Image 1 (tube, rainbow, N blue to C red):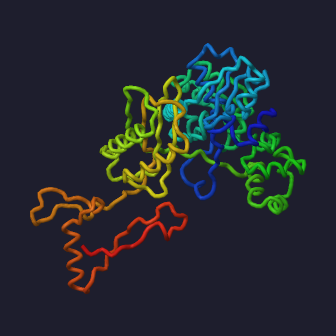
Image 2 (tube, rainbow, N blue to C red):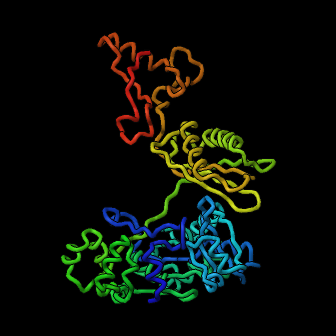
Image 3 (tube, helix red, strand yellow):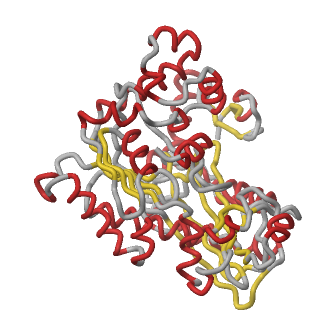
Length: 452
C-alpha cells in the first residue's frame, strides 16, 4: 500500500484543499434498506484541475496551480500539477510563496459551476450502467454492482464496462487517469481505488477482503483525526494490527469511534452503496447586456430570477429548502454560493434574504456576465391554500387568494363565525414570525388570535 493512501485518507479530503468533500459512509438502520454490497469506486484525483487542463491543453506541460475560493489578499493554492509539485509548490501555500518557488507558475481561477455540471453528467452516464449510484464529492462515485454479473460478466469486465461508460463524459486522458477499486462494501472499494494505479483496477474478492485490509494503514479509516493520531502513537499503524487487539479494549480506549474503526478493520462492517436520488432542480437564468458588478444590479437581477423560478409550474405545491446562486464571471471562471433555509419556504423575500446574505459574505470576484438561480432541495408545501382557497357555492367565479396573501377566504370566515356562535369566541390562532433567525425555537414564531 502506498504512502499516498495514508496521507490522503488521514485528512479525509481527497481534492487537495477547500471545496472537496469528505468520504461519507452510511451505516445503521439503513443497512437493511435498499442498496448494493458489491461496490465499485471510481476516483479521479485533482478532478477540478484536470478539467481545467482539458479546457486549456497548452498548459498540460507547464507548472499549473488552481487557486482556492477564499476571498481576501491571502489567496492560497488548492490543487497543483506534477511539475508544480516538483518545484516545491504544495496545496495550502500562499500565492506569494508558491510564485517564489516557481516563477513560471500559472495560476487558474476555479470554475465550480463547470465542475458541478461535469460531475452531474458523470452521474447520469453511470446511472445507465447501474441503478445504484452514489456520489461522494467531486470526482468520486460509488457504483452498486449487485446482480450485474449476469449482464456484464466477471468483476474485471464490470469495471471495464464502467470505465468505458466514462468516455461519454471525459476525454481519453481523464478516463485513463481514473482509479477504480471493486470490493465488498464501500470502505473496501474506496481503499482499493486509492491503492490502484491509473489503468490498473484493484479487484478484491469477498474472501480476500480481510487480508487485503490488514495491510492498509490506519489512515484509511474515516474517523476523527484525533483518533488516528492516538492510534499511531500506540504504534497501531495498520488495520491488521488494530484487528488483532481485543475489541473490548479498543472500545474502552476510543469509545464509539474505536468500535467503528474496529468493525471496518475486521471486515465486519459492510456499508452498502445507496441509490442517488436528486429531484430535478428548478433553474432560472439571466444574461446581462454588459458585465455587472454593482451590488444593486445583482440584487435586482436576483429578485427577477426568484419571481421566474417560483412561478414555474413544477415548483407549485413545494417549498424551497436549498437554493444556489451561480454566476459566469467576466474574463472566465465562475462563482457559486448556496443558501440553506432553516425552514422550507416559498416566500420570495425570505429566500432572497438568505441568498443576498451569502452574496455579501462571499461576493463574486469580478463583474458578472450571467446569473443562474437553482432550487435543488425541496420541502413540504409552504401553505395550505388547497384547504382554504377554493370556489364556494355562493357565486365566486374564480379561486380566491390564499391566506398567505393577506386575504381571508369566505369559507374560513364562515367557519369562524359558526364557531363563535357555538362556543362564544374564535378558538383559532395564526402563526406569526417574530424572530426567525433566533437560536431559541420559542422566539421564532408567536400565536396571534385569529378573528376576522
